[in-house]
Image 1 (cartoon, rainbow, N blue to C red):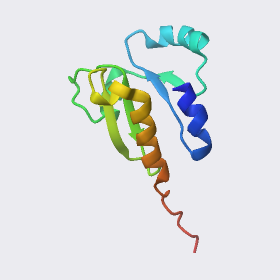
Image 2: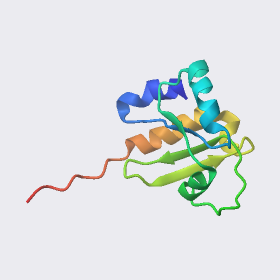
Image 3: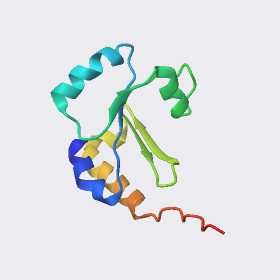
Image 4: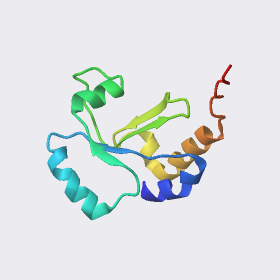
Length: 113
């Protein structure tokens, strides 16, 4: 993800990472020290993640989870679990998804009256 962030940052891409397992708060510092991601990484409660994904509170979560949000803040696609076909050639499919979203125009700003 760090390579993708570096490559696409100048075009408006921002990767975000979130851990949501029960011990995420305790494990996150070691993860950051080991991997040095070049994008923000935090942690969240499982319930908050399910709410964000608009999934039922009893839905099983399978990692990794990738969520693509467009320039308008709308979730455009979600990919969950290594058995998702998206992850068969993750780098290629991620780049294709990003190219599609980054080519779309940003919403126009309203002019002051």
